[in-house]
Length: 193
Image 1 (tube, rainbow, N blue to C red):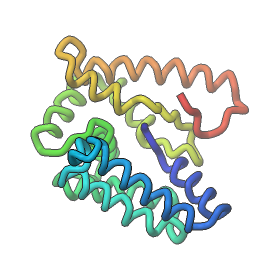
Image 2: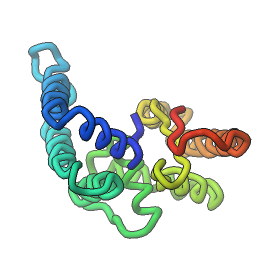
Image 3: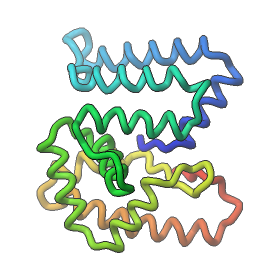
């Protein structure tokens, strides 16, 4: 699902409470699970590109107890940007890298398609989505859209929908969520959706 720095902070808290031995077992379990998705016939997920991203994620998480959650989170996204040769300077660059991760973009062609979908949006939509994708859930209100990666994959695969349409609908959903949060000030900073 979708994550933000608050999720990394939550992981840090669990490790601080339960110890890093449990974390190491969890990482090993995840690697084994992802590597064996085809039931002994190799893996549908753990190809060379995904293995590289996974190993990068594990390496970044090794610093979890010594670096801030925000630094861990954006450090991983910076690593992904470098691997894909993507810009990582402006707020929109950061959002596009985040969307590239959510959309499982693995090459320049996939990124260019994503970027064109982004540029087809209006300024209001891009601003709303930028606010959402840069919110950390620690200091700023954030929504954890758990099924967003699947929505992105399905929208990309459906020629009647496409990524621009999904992002436009997401903008409307975020506006509704922000209205609800404004009426419920006691909600936590990270709201699962």
